[in-house]
Length: 225
Image (cartoon, rainbow, N blue to C red):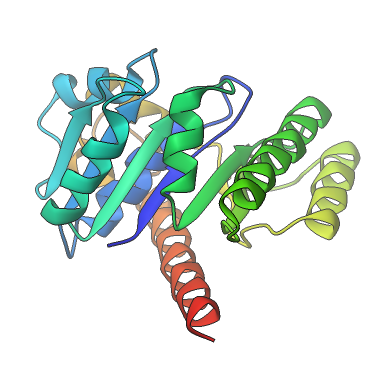
């Protein structure tokens, strides 16, 4: 069963939001385990605000000594395992990344974010060399403007896309995404009377999820070849 980690050496990059969005969409068709391996415990907090979407199960990690066993147990329980990692280099991150079929690196359209994304990708590559295997990784642009980007944002976005593997889909800055941390649940559980733009956020989330599935399939075929 695929293991997907969300990694960034910079706080506030969108790891937790991206993990919640992906888990909620995948759970429309299958079981998903979310492992909260970030000491900030944002996933755990989200799961207590309201019942998570059906078929989403949240596990609060017991730390670096437990995470590999937690991943193994999650693999037996669900079709997809998603891990929200802490925003710093650590042994726990190393263990989880080495177990991953795909590492998603969220970033914004800002130079500091782009620099941190490149640093995180370098760390993932180092883990792969140590384990003598390629660990698939890709940058996901988050919190981006859905309409018009500034010239600087376009430049940073384009430079990073030219340099590393990226998702075509961006998780735009939307009220519905940020509201997940206040209301709990998934996008489809939000109240349209309280939150605007839910349908557009769902469409955005569906495109991201479809690309993740395609990327996993591409990685699987490459491994077989």
